[in-house]
Length: 326
Image (tube, rainbow, N blue to C red):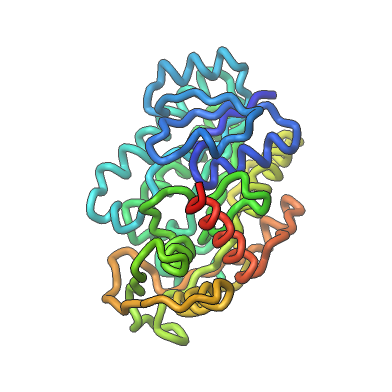
């Protein structure tokens, strides 16, 4: 079986490409390299430089490589940017996903795994959030992802495509073997930014909002190690191949840390103090969101290996040091 990984040269995509190759899978990556890197890919993966919005090119790729499964990461992911430029997100995330799904149906692709997000829940009234928690996204980013989930459910009912939607919580860390990591220079991920500040690659960092209804006033998130998340993709592909039902799964650990707790962990693990500026809230940020992760463990038998904030930070630091040395 050939697996197409869209956006596979990016952060989560490259980790998943490595996990699939490590498991003996044949992987083709489609990426326009706007934010991804060839160097992040496993040597055994085939890279095709192109765009998921080009339906004719995608159709040729699916047929030429005999693709039977798609793992779809390609898209835009920055919440504040989506508020400022919503049409970009509905184009890159929703319209292009529709194009990819159409090509998949026409080519007879059997399985489709979609990179969704906890942002579909918005600011939930109860925690932890389960897969049945009402969806109420606060940003165009979250709405663009939820629209794609809806499309997949409708297409599965009409055409028999078997799919999984994985709703990620806050992804962080890097491959423990240092083969890939978060390499985007202007990334906005909290741990990435804090690690860069600790290593002097930024003059300092900002905390956006200190008046949230949380223990220390800053946002609380469920941080999942990127390698555990990558393995969840390999696990859910196996679930679909065995005839498992279409499924929507939260991918998190089930407990959260505040922004200030994360910053203190980075300072402790790195041994470096750095300036932190307290700033007003950003639009689109919920106060607190933590996953109920029972379903992903039960359905897939998924067991995380790196459920420890200090470990996540240590792997992120090691990767950032490697980038600085290159």
